[in-house]
Image (cartoon, rainbow over all chains, first blue to last red; front, side, top):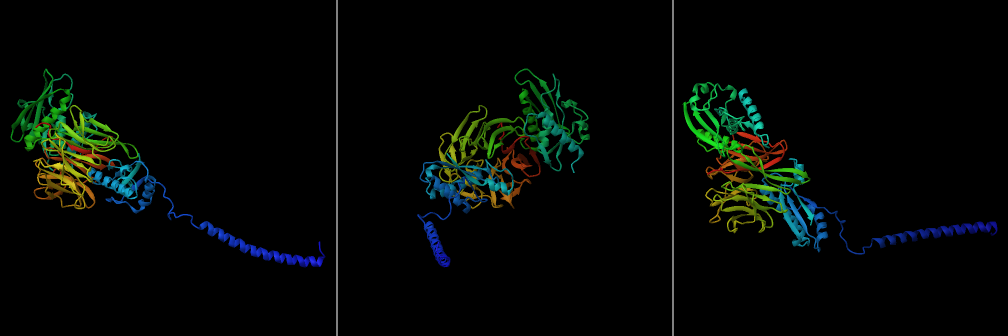
Length: 161
Length: 436
């Protein structure tokens, strides 16, 4: 539209200005993105650092032990969260592996079920909503005579009533 | 090591038992016998008919005496004569085949409710004299009882110990129906496994069958209400009664020697404890309560103290408590796990589940000398029960991945298995003598 020489010069000037503007707008975009990121990462409210555990209903025990295992705690916490403050009733069924006498294993199964009941109670679950029963070695889920089967049978099962 | 003739006898005995016990679920296998069993000839009893005898009575006596391991019945094929009464006995016929003792008999039919009458005689072949003559009678359903009576008489006359061939056993069978779900059955059978009779069936666990001292009643634990309760049942009428249904454990029923009280395990007060219930008033008394697991009570024959299992020392061991003053004394010091004691009738010894070096065995503890003797070579052994004449101990074990019953003599020398053809069998309980 203008004279050829002047228009070329003006084009270069405009291009340079445009590039300069683009460059600065990039920075603005970057800082804008940064500010967006920091805005989204700012916590709205306090939550636990671990994600919520999937609900488990069977808890396993070590040989001759009735203490709640470390690896059961997260699952038990999730159950406690589900049951706490509700009128939901549950039944804890304690079991033992086949080694030893049947009557003593009834007592061992009860110890395990009570250990789980105590844990839930400490987590705020109403004790009156939790029933404890032991089946000893009478209801095995695995019938082999090996450590693998024994480990599967040393358990407490939580059942909704 | 085993002579051909003894193998032949074993095959004959087993085949005979299969034929006789066609409806029985348990069969007998001998796995080890004494070194010098007493040879004895049981001549097939004479019978004039009509038709064959409903049971091979002499064959049942053969099997009884063979099963206890102390006798070697002579093969019928080697018998040179078949006497049925004293006048027909020629001692040289029996010395010739090496028999030390001889039993003969004859069955006659008599009018009345007990149409089969047996007269039998026992002879000492070496001394050439008759030791006893006796009679037994019954109807067709009592034929096995007649044979076991003969075995009892023969055993007592020769050994001086009362025979236990006429006794019964209780046991539990379980059949899987799903994951962690079983059908449970409580059975009663003869001590040789014949005439198995279903007492109770349940889709929830049945445990711990126990005989009353007069053998008229039994007690057991049933989870039929989805919680364990102690029940007692009158055998002849089937009438049953729930004795306990407290929260927590209700288990281990044990009748006192006078039949008036029952010891049991209850955890209603916080942890498993021994209680004694007065069966007339239902009053409960806690025995030596503490923070440990106490269970598996058994009465001493004088009814004044109770032997039980406790982990108050860390691991299960056997203790004795005097009821009058609550004084507790520990009985077991060998092995790292001792439980479920069963006392001999005289209270001088007990059998128990015993663990040493990892395996569970049945062991006997001599209470006078404090010595422990391991009786079994199988592992995963549990639930010992003593015959009322203290000659044998029956217990539950595993074989081929299946739960079976086994028996061992109190000195550990003679062993046999009672394999089940169908089910996982466990928790045998040997009856008292059925007659005083």
